[in-house]
Length: 460
Image (tube, rainbow, N blue to C red):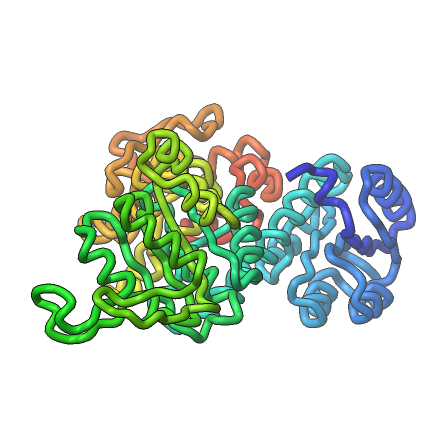
């Protein structure tokens, strides 16, 4: 995401009784492409927020009409999604830390460093956009009645693009959809999302894996059969086209269909009718969405005469190429948290990943994609010695040289991962001379996260 895009259509409210700061900081931010409205009174600022103005607030923490902590609380009451950045003097840093506890996103010490503020604004906007995407995802999840919710997260750029493609595909009810992706990327999950986002979400969703089925069995599963149509057919049976009528039918591993089955399937797609095996009656399934999925290159299959070219062009109308998990690194940790929440609920536990385990996962190639990630976490929750899952619990190797360690801090013998995190925080605090905001930035976390870790480990 380009940094210039982050400043577009963003209203920043600057609140400070110091005219020099309002003028200088406001001028610098405007020249950097941000839209600024500067006021001296927190009471005026609250009126503007009540009128709907402001996406981000930059506020002094010590003002004559109202202190910054009170202003923060009142602003959050009006708009909980508002992010507030605080300005403090050296003697008021304890108040700034209190502000972080009460919901401030970041803080800066005087004299102000304008470049640091720009960096924080970029980080704040990325966080806000992430929350917006999560809200969209939550809307999708609410459409599911099943206890097994879809495991799709679109926090990475490719994940966000994939979510948009899913939404567009769902908006066209009569279009056949082709899903391309490696094994384990979540093709069935995405198929269910398309179904649940469509107008036919209350209709059936039926899925069939075409791989490994003999031709006669495949046709019976697809189209159903009449009683006595073959040996063992002792009663009439409906196929998935009939069972999924008016809803969505997913055909996974479509490339594994025989040429004869492909021929019959093509006719069904073109005429939107089918006959049960051994039957003569044409059954219409107009209004049923067809989703085909494959982990193979169908164009190559066509060139090798293993897949019909006319069927390929018939299903290649709305195509979604699902990127492998290794290309969606930003989605790995959110997926882990989702899976662990589910596992914790089932097992009555409180498992979480330590930072080095998250880093190790983001460096792993995941040949088995999301399915492999889920299995790794499942195994780890069974064999982990504590509720803090390490890289070793996942079968991965942690890189203890990832983070910079300050001068004068030695690694103790038998250092465990929790000790390592505590040591890194202390080293960063020492390097940044106790500046919490700078420490958080050097560790790559938010000030709120730093405060929680300091409180957890008893670091002053």
